[in-house]
Image 1 (cartoon, one colour):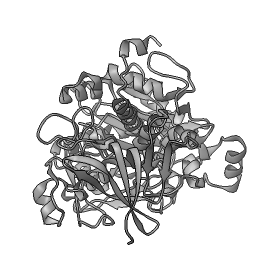
Image 2 (spheres, helix red, strand yellow):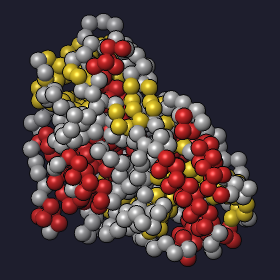
Image 3 (tube, helix red, strand yellow):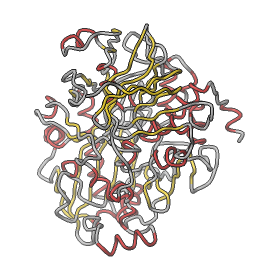
Image 4 (cartoon, one colour):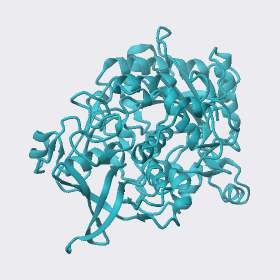
Length: 539
């Protein structure tokens, strides 16, 4: 490496993912601010990124950090693959595009845990409405004219309608808007797409800002440490083009690397649990014990059935369908695979949903490591109220080494019991018309697996990740909190974290939209801007 090259900015944002694009895009709306956005990956101008149904084709490629957990004792020692986007848009460029905010109760809990009412549902709802451009129009819960396009699926699969009708017949309430008045129930998802194409955070926030002279975006730039002098972050060091560069930040450094990369970068910078840092040979800059702790993820268990007749999405990527998608933005390639969902409770005594089901008109097995080999239908049972916790730790002081990820799956027995109940409910829906006429035999867990003991073993053998890691830089006011409610790293001035890692708890549902909202909130905090929920609700 040659001598570092230095540049000057007001704000340096690390990570052009779901939150980072929102932070940089919003900050660059102020022409007086010089903003630098650093991304370790490359462009999102890739066909497999733009085609919704091609999402799993991006996994395990150069577009993916391609992480793997440590062996999980709760899963009989299995390691799980964790895809994370390594390109503009981050994981919003490789995810299933489900537009989901979570429940009112999630944000009210955040407000309680942080002691800050500005994280309550009524305070974050205006941020969701501001960022949204919903094809259904504006109302109390939704906005139009924002950067994030949200639409209904243009060509839903017939089995998707069948599973919704079956769940309603089985007694679950119909819900046509999971982001409206209530979360519980069954219905088709809205997606972050525009005319049948993926609409990532990069498409929403970054590309429209690309010509602003005060915004600099550098790809292929691996940030290796935050520079701290006298207790203040003054910039970052990063590698690009075979050279070491230094970017100075006159006002702030914002880490938006996600729940794996942000705690890793803090620890590489000497900010984290002091004993652990010394063990891997990192000089301690600030002892902050909570960094990398409290990791949470949504686990899923697939219930897969063969079908009596009909065609799944298995062969969706045919030349005919590709031509149709290019010409009209319609057809099976517009599918996000998980076209419908259900929120319900594993125990009727619970006051809020703790289970989410994703219904896929295709065989989804072993995290799409191999292409589907048969026509099948998948019900993914997801636990959205997780009690188990894991951690992120450094494997080496070398920033090119992947960190140690311990997801902690099923370390709390309550999670196992809830998932078993979810599998039982999935079976009940599969046995109900009109879905029952579509499905054949249950392939997994399989009809021979009966009783809760058998299902417990099956859950341990088949559990996978829904790729929603959060909370590894949790916000709060206790000693294990990493950032305060204003997203400022405790004990270091001029440094914030703005991504899914700051969530105090997992939301009930997919984490992409909440992560973008956190980016919006971070930009407001940096700009000193507040949103009055009463005035926002009034339009």
